[in-house]
Image 1 (cartoon, rainbow, N blue to C red):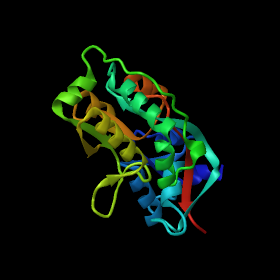
Image 2: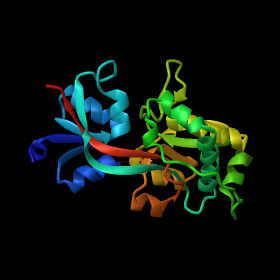
Image 3: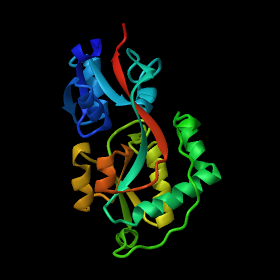
Image 4: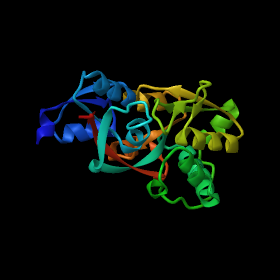
Length: 239
């Protein structure tokens, strides 16, 4: 109950924002989970609600935020990540095929290990076959020659290395899909609250950024199978 007296920062349109709202917490919406962490570090907010995967990568000794803390056992919600495509798009099925191959070959497990994601958080993927849909998004992407991936900066899923190149568990999986499609890849930072508009306007082809599979998301987009487990946790300044 003491938590309800704290001021929270949450990413607009995120599972963390939904969790805070459901619990009746006093929350200010910011543009990204990284901004939410900065609010707590700066003392502007008492706490924030972010993804467990991001907390594991960003918080604690030897990380960007050594003075912040969270309890991995105190989960506000548990959820699964999926990848979002335009409603009716055949790209989701195509991505399922690539993820199935990546899991069965051990590539997905190696990437998870590389980015500090424990294997028990991975959702096993099955091999599957792809059939081109009518008004095919896959054909559209192959014809234009670029897969445009909508992201936010969110370690360990999508973030820049020292050379300014996008890397991360999600970024590297997306590169596998672009390679299989035979196209270039372009990462575009989006306003998370506008992800559906970005997709529908064809500004991006896919939302691939630790996206929680909520009922709302799954009704508004063509989503892949779940590929990773996650939870929402509360982050505060250390004592």
